[in-house]
Length: 266
Image (tube, rainbow, N blue to C red; front, side, top):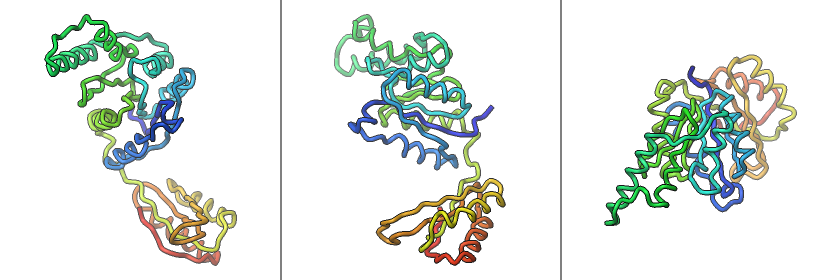
């Protein structure tokens, strides 16, 4: 069964503390939009095992296509692999393909440095922990340094580093979900409304949604916009072009005596 919604879980104390700015959310939206897809939800979680486990349980149970970014390394503050196993109630095990790729990477690094390849050295043995995944996982190739991510059903686990995560995200979308590409793009039509209150426009918004199936009405008020000042951007969005619903919205606004400004199409 193909997922019908897409989500992202972004993991790491460094994001919540402000030490690093998250870039995954915006990039995920961009990559999805390029394929005619749209993100449905996002969740941020710190490096806390119970919270990560709960977030991943939600992801597995949702049936959605979900990307999880961060925490799949092998340092003490990396918990994602363990939490994914706990969320599914399975064991962790060294994945044969992931192991071989890690060994290949270690061999490459040794050759680049002119050093002997010593797979039994303690630090190299520790690196194999990056290939310990929940049982049943499939690998996601990492073109940057060969240290794989992994998939469990429709939930896909990527590193926190954008230079690795983003091409891996593209690989997942293009190899496993090509059948979802090119669906009807969500189109927004909106208008700038001056001199109106959201509360007075709510009945019109509710009437438009009730009248047009599959259409969502949105209201974005602003009090200090550099161009329009105090206003409301009121619009409709849906698969394909919601022109009919938008025309009905504008008709209702004019009937209510609203002052309309520029129109926007996205």
